[in-house]
Length: 91
Image (cartoon, rainbow, N blue to C red; front, side, top):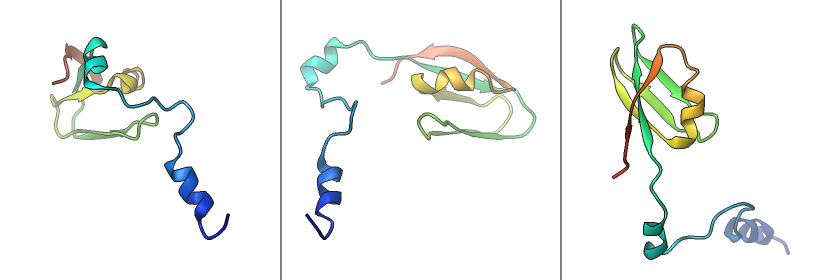
């Protein structure tokens, strides 16, 4: 293989640990994960980039509340001036 054929093969092959796409019927059977609202209690603004997912969370002002993905909650719980507020169901 030459001229990028290996690269194209790798790009189109499933990643190790990747889940196969689910059908709508099986998606309904799995309970939805809940996100948690986090409130910023600092004095200015805050932007956090999750090292797990790469998601950016922007808190524009004191008291701002942002929904945080389930995978990122374990990291944001340790950020000073952030506190979990309540659980929300994804729509």
